[in-house]
Image 1 (cartoon, helix red, strand yellow):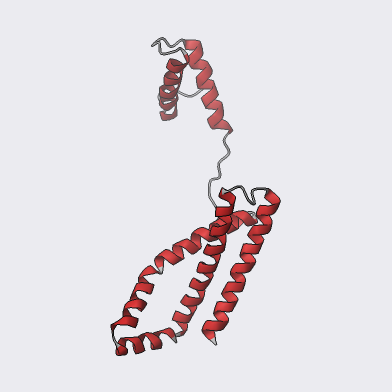
Image 2: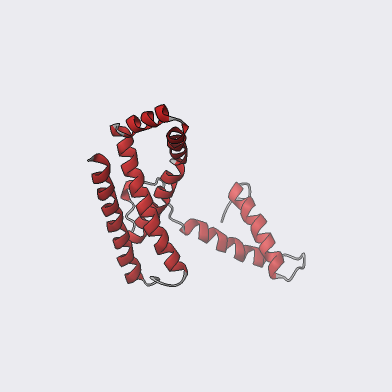
Length: 171
């Protein structure tokens, strides 16, 4: 049992007393045996939990559907963070002829080409994964086998979009 002066004991007492009050149909009477039974239950729940002491992200092996979902979130975040860049490029393109020439020179730098290639992957993957998630909402590709197949197709399509955009941007 937990000691009476420890913080977990106080939390157990609060939650178990509340649970006992619910169990006795709203009466304010809490018997000792009910409290002891619920306290033992909560104590066993806490002692049986095996939580990791550290989280090593390199050791987590997600299935392909989980990787696909994670990549969908990453691509969405990249697209969101690229909105100011798109606004800046758009403002340069419509200001005047000199700023348009500045934009054209900016588009030929290797770092900007790399950013555009990465954003092309983000657009492609986010589009394809978004379609998959919409199909899942209408109960298409809800079985494990079809979800895995569609996830692999999305990953392959994202790589194809990345390679095609890279070829077009860098050549």
